[in-house]
Structure formats: structure tokens, C-alpha cells
Amino acid sequence: MDQNQESYKAEWAKDSEVIKTSIPMYMLFFLIKCMPKFMSPIIARMVAGSFYIFSKSVRDKCNNFQKQLIEYSQGKYLKKPSAYSQILSFSITVMEKVECWIKNVNRSRMHFQNDDVQDLIDTVNGGQGAFIFISHLGNSEILRHFSSINDIALKRDIPVAVLMDLDSTSNFTQTLKKFNPDFIKNIVNVRDITPATMMHLEDVIAQGGLVVSAGDRISKTVSNRFIECDFLGKKAPWSYGVFLLAMLLKSPVYYMFGLRKKAISFNREYDLYVTKSNVDLECGRRERDSRIVELCKEFVQNLEKICIENPFQWFNFYDFWKIPE
Image (tube, rainbow, N blue to C red):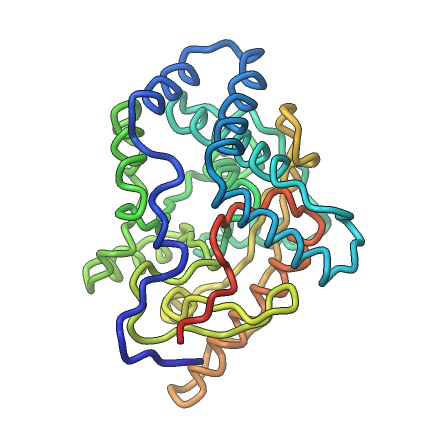
């Protein structure tokens, strides 16, 4: 774990928003809200084509990521880079997310893997809360299925608190709120973590709910701690704070990933992966840092394994391995 004395702006935050509030974006939201289903592939390819042609930075980041993955995995799942495939996969995912947000529907079909998903369902049905680590791999929006009793035989409605950095996507967020004011109802802005926020998160856990946070990005402005951990053969910085938060809430921890069966597909078929953490979070203060690092490494190992198998569904478009000096 490294400490940085000077303020460091996270690498992912140096670029402006990938999706901005503008007349074209507002029109895109309107189209998604009103268009028939058969139009989705056309719109997705138009958006992807625009990004591919006009954003050299995104193309370069996709190619660099895929080259690193190919080298590390020795070409097992990917033989040569294709920036367009990754951008198109991202475009499809964004459209699916926006449709879920503004139409308040989710037509995705989930296929549970033979992992710990039943353990999570039993935990929630038993009235116990949990901390869920997600990532920018795949589509985390299929988590909405866990608040639907009909989809996975839950016995009750589940309170959910989702940690997000709303400031880093403020333009996108404001546009989305115009279409669905309830969008941020369950969202907690990570920039505003206060004692009152902690009490709210503890209350969600106490009610048998889920606290959800991405574990694959450091905070937008880092001035104290981050964790170095190998990812695809190179050291990368990981958030210390989010893993500390999981420990402080003292609830079971799960890692969850939702991946389309085929990266370039419009049939909404998803595989849901759930893994329960084996790290014992009950410890004294002297052991706390080592347990946090252990929790981070366990998350990264799960993320890396699924990422190698689904390279086009990786949606971190920046120099992921940039370590603060």
C-alpha cells in the first residue's frame, strides 16, 4: 500500500466524460426512450462508429489494453486487438443501461453460473445484508434483478444503496435525471461520504439490504492511500477506501459480474457470476490494513479471470496501469 503526500488526480478522471450532455446525446436518450426494439442495433453501431472515428484516445486505450491482455493470456481468448469491437460492445451496454434507467424495464435474461449466487440469495432471504463489489467489466445494471422478487424467488423487496461518483459524470447524470427523476434515488455520491452517510449504509445492511460499489477505480482525487496489485501481469492502483468501507460495514462480501454471452450481441443473454469472499474481516486494528489488501487481491483475481475471457466487455477507457509517482 502506498501513500502519496501530494494531491494526485486519478488517471481515469483526467479525460472529460466519454458521454456528454449535448443536443446529440439528448436526442439519443429520446430515441432510446421512444424507438422500437429493432432499431437498437442501428443506433448502437452509429454511436460506436462515431466514437471509433473521432476519438483516437479511446481507440488507443482499447488497443493498449487488449495488447496487454493478449500478452498476459498468451492469446488464449483473443488473438489480435480490435478497438472497434470493444467500443461497439460498450455502445450496446450503454444503450441497455439507459433503456433500463429511462424506460424502467430490463429485458435481459440472466443465466446463473454454478457459483455462490444461491448463497447470496439465501443470505438476503435470511434477512442479512451484504456488500457487493462490481466493476466496469460487463453490465452491472443486471443487479436490478436482485430487487425483483419475481426474477430470482426473493421473499421480500431489498433496499439497495449504490456508491457512485456523480460528479465525474455530472453532465450525463443531469441529462438522465430529465428523463427519469428517480434515477438517483438509491445512489450515494462517493464524494459526500460523511458520518451520516455511514449511518445510512449501516442501516441498509441492518435491513438486510445490499451496498454496491465498483472496486476497479481509485477515487477521482487521491491524496492519501491506494493499493498496488497486479492485474494482467502489470501493477495497477486500486482504491483503498472502498475496501476499507466493506470492512467497516462488517457484512458478508460478494463479487458480482454480469457479462453478455456474446460481446457483440443484441439478444440480452447474460451470464451472472457471484463469488463470496473468503477473507475474514473480523480482526483488530493492527491486522486491518493487511486484510484490506487481501480483500483487494481477491477481488482483482476474480476480475482478472473473467476479464481474460471477455476482453471486449472491459469499459475502463484510460491508462489503467498508471501508478501515481
